[in-house]
Amino acid sequence: MKSPRVSARALIVRGNSLLAIRAKDAHGEFFVLPGGGQNHGETLPEALLRECREELGVEIEAGELCYVHDYIAERDEFCTEDCSAHQVDIIFRARILAGEPGWGSAPDTHQLGLQWLSLEALSAYRFYPRALRRWLTEPDHPVYLAFEEGL
Image (cartoon, rainbow, N blue to C red; front, side, top):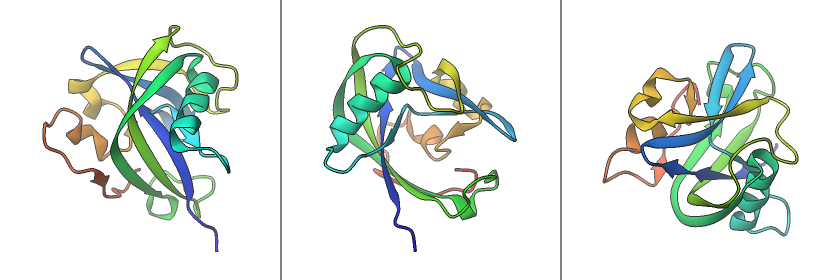
């Protein structure tokens, strides 16, 4: 049996907008937080810094841990590839220290670009994790985001 993959994700908010990776799958465009898998011997903040360089081309500062989210592909209505995947996303607040977000040195293969999404309009987008949409603008929120179908 496969073990869950651990992923570090960046929650970068500027004004009233959230920075997201724009991607596409068989069901159309969707948006996710920047970040990705942790390598052996790498701390979560180190993984986050590396992933933001690779995907966004910027230097960031990892802030406080704000959310933990399970992604279980076999329960995802949009799963088309590896439906046995299980990923635990560790989501940190982050801020850009240097550079303007753009193409990084090693963007993900499904990455189409970047987009600043209005926090108030997140429900209009296919944004994942879905559970995060309702908590971003709430002052009191859970740290663990329970899995919801559709990511």
